[in-house]
Length: 365
Image (tube, rainbow, N blue to C red):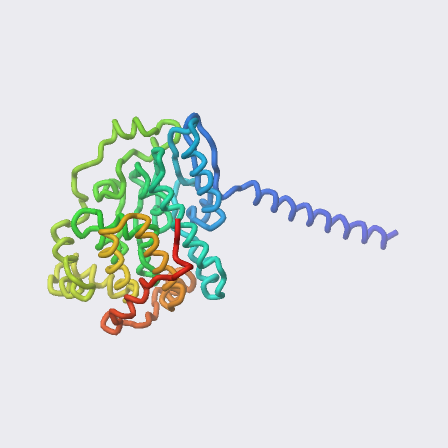
């Protein structure tokens, strides 16, 4: 009897454990990473990974793209709204860790992620319907690509915008080569090279956001293209925290080395801080980014994304990206060992090779 009772108890514990596993799997499946819904005549996309600041991965891209195209051609849908869940972030970037592991292993994800992300970025830029991005909270990297090419970008006092890619051996992609050089003066180049963070109203004043609305009012129920356009005209004021004339003078140079020389020669607190920042960045990333923005100023968004796809694959073949992710995101020692370690060691020919055609593997739309 005791033996039978023991085995019965064992089976019961196993059954309970199985039920707990099944319950966890079901709850994971229910918690969709992207929520797609119709609210009146608006198509609403909610990025739903708040625990990882709504980081964008490939399955999410594969959900958003077809739905965006469907709504674009649907007569019952007048506008498309995209927002982030959780209150902290719109989207803090792409799922870089997954891409890093894939790149190391030669997994196709390192190609597929960038390719499909850039195709989505282009679709947003070409969308015929008003596309409204509610960038309420952290908006970086991949989150910029989901927002900045749309017709309306609505910032709030909680918005934190940055393109910090040069710190991880990458470059400001997702169409950064298109929108950054189109900001006034040398502001785009400054943001691209330093990863400087814009906050709140300065996101609009810099021209990244088209409008500013208080965070508590940023809801899908009271925002549509007409009332955004009429009630929240873009500000003509310059950002409080950016010294435009100083940025223009310091970042007006024909090379990254020239910018560094300008910063050191200036000697102001602002200039010294930027010089220190650039000294921490990947020299390869800085030179690629400088050339990317130079070229992108005269290209269409689709052509910029083709160029950036080539650059993304050059970074996957190199070493700085993996070292940058290790230092900043994995070990978090903030001490990357770049190769080459100085701007002077990096030849123009090496930089030029990063922009070379991939032949049949080039990005196409």
